Image (cartoon, rainbow, N blue to C red):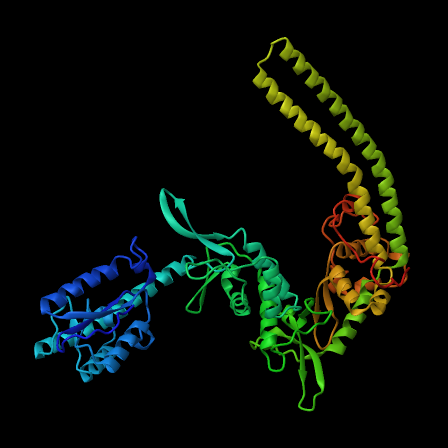
Length: 584
């Protein structure tokens, strides 16, 4: 803030320069200027009156922490007035430290003022143009610089201590919020999950990890879903910009970590994303920063499930990144590369896309199980359902008998109320317990009817898919192949040579484990080595003895009824998709 120039007699015209270095020093009182600015003004005006000066203006820098004088708006306005209007003889500050805390800048400012015929005066320090005054000025400038550096080091030490102990430095990022809680009888500052924004922030990470969105796309999509920034005193809530998302996706804070001066510490706050999700997002960010791929989103149905087998064998988990690049003559090259090559931890050469696609098609042959085993397992499922039907009927009879007993108890309690033999409060409590037990029994009747048949249907769907999975995969379009990969596999591990390894999803892993156990127990059943034993990466190598009944199998290697109800929720590809299964 400044006042307009006024006509005053030369030699006695002064302006005041008032400054605090943070918003916190301003927002401390009913007065919008806080306490510090009015206090400085009062002392400076008293100094001006004592010297017989007329105050012709003031320049206020509220909450400006900029150390460089060039970045202080009010100060630059004051210098411009001094140079242009030439109506100022003195600049009065509360203390030299309010002007600056750098000896060199102090000397430069004083030199500029003196060249314009203006004298700097401190309202609380005895500095003037005398030799003693200039000496004191120089000493105070050096002391102020030392105190500034000392305060900065003290703050850094305290921040480092807080970071080492998992504390959040400054304002919590989007998805979290700063709160005060009562801890051991004390009010302390901490951070908690923002219940409104955290689910949307997590969605943003998950969407970007698919590789199907640019930062611009994500900003629009998340705005439509209601993700907005927190409102501040100066700015209302607004959609999250692409730059904000770019900053967010590099921040380890969302992993539950604290980054202070390049050192990562475990934070006390809850993580919003997993390490796997964070790594997938980093892969995409890194890939898009490469030359010729920065602003484009590349789509491939194998993205997200390919990993480097070389790194896997070394105990690391490194994703294969899909990349496109053009040569100088315009030819397009498509390949997968190991993320470990970027930081020098892996020497795997780039894998051409056509080679990777062929390796995955070849690997699907290892997924198939013999038809005789599938038929046998299907028959065992039918048998289990028949046996379970009898058990279910007996269970229902028992549950209905319990219901009848509860009805009798309820009638007796009501009779006791009429006879005033028991207090009404006790009766109410007992009736509530009886009704809760009746509800539990009713739910159990429903659950035992649906669980087994649902589990059996899921397993039959799974068996249907692996009758000839390679043919199914070959004829499927790209989008269907993506769904098949996500249905059957957790990960593929690839190298330039050797077998392609993979982690199967359930229930397919258990199907193969069961077949392996079944085949070992009946060696004379087939003259051929089972296909899965040629590829030990699918499960346990054939020369290892499985743990005691790991898959819940019968003595002949076929699943028990327990397994049928443990895979509810599996959703295989069905014939409703826009392509046909080869076995249909």
